Amino acid sequence: PNGYLHIGHAKSIWINFGLAEKFGGTCNLRFDDTNPVKEDLEYVESIKRDVEWMGYHWDGAVRYSSDYFDQLYEWALYLIREGKAFVCDLSAEQMREYRGTLTEPGRNSPWRDRSVAENLDLFERMKNGEFADGARSLRARIDMTSPNINLRDPVLYRIKKASHHQTGDKWCIYPSYDYAHGQGDAIEGVTHSICTVEFEDHRPLYDWCINNLPTPSQPHQYEFSRLNVNYMITSKRKLKLLVDEGHVDGWNDPRLPTLSGMRRRGFTPKALRDFCEMTGVTKVVGVADISMLEFALREDLNAHAPRAMCVLRPLKVVLTNYPADQSETLSAPIHPQHEALGVRTLAFGREILIEQDDFREQANKHYKRLVSGKRVRLRNACVIEADEAVKDVDGRIIEVRARVIEDTLGKDPADGIKPKGVIHWVSATDHLDCEVRLYDRLFT
Image (cartoon, rainbow, N blue to C red; front, side, top):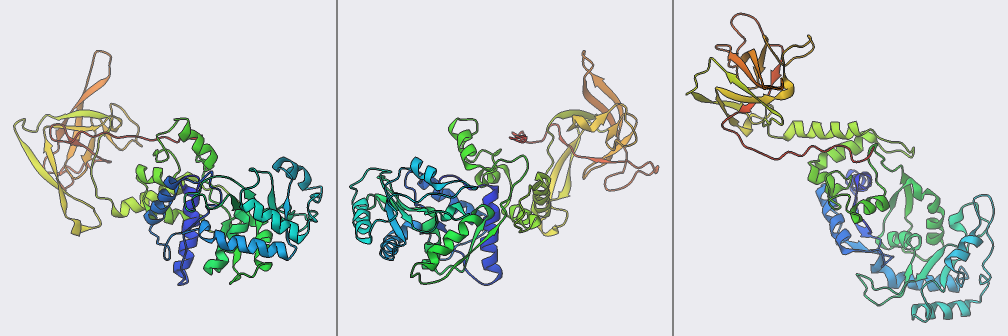
């Protein structure tokens, strides 16, 4: 692991764990830790937290590719003895030149035809640390003319003299992801190995390794299209750049599409699961609209969130016919659909606060809030009618004077003139001050 999970990983988590639940199977959590240079325990712990937060639990203990390094090494020796792997002296740059292109076949390495004995000796010496990083690699002997570049003698092992967070300094050669992936599945008895569609071209190599090794089981790889959401960037490289350069407040910045950031922002696990279900499973690459994600969150919050009223840009309203020395306590349901949650109390008096956007001196018929000379209902309270707007020297409205329409608590006005809308409010004297952060989209 070399980064935090993001919204795209939520889709993968939902598919893998969801399929296991649906068909009575189990899902393993295995970390690909084949590159010790890029591993970080911080990422390991964050991934475990995110999977559990999403509402899922893996089977047994957490697994690591490094748990199988001994077996992977033995299988590499098996491939060498079978004449299906060789030690190559080409550098990474030379290997790219020999590999060819999508329209041109590759060329065989000058060291492709080394004897089994020489390959076994060199591979043993690689393991013993006799060569520098990048000096040699172990490659599969497949087909340098294959139209699939992944089958053009891919690297199975490379030299990296770096300490590993699980195995310490035991190894200085490490398997490639493509080699470790399928064999880890086979060791664990995985039946369905589900990847995003960019790994589709890697499946022939996955199958080649399984078919050419004495693995205890025969797993199969399946692919689905990754989840892309507009206004969100899910490239770990780009997200890491934002974090490293201090443009955001760490990996859990609420503006980021990381699961830890979305959790901090207020997204719920169910909203993410519902969003994944709404987008469906397909191999067609597309972009989901962020409004679908926001809809899923609203639906979940609407079903479960306790109600409260908050005024962000307050405008004072003085109820001129309400006694200055009087106040009362109103009640409102904590949740309108869940009576068992009980009620909350609302302090009500002569002065209240409403949103600045909820009052206009003049408005068209489509404006359903408070207008001079018109009526509106205060949520969970009475009907009021605006009489006058008080302005400062610059002409800005700083106060509204209004009247309470008598006997309208939970009732329509006796004169039959009903309000057109309902607005929220808080007491001007009995309320809580709070800090509210309004997040815009980080990416355009």
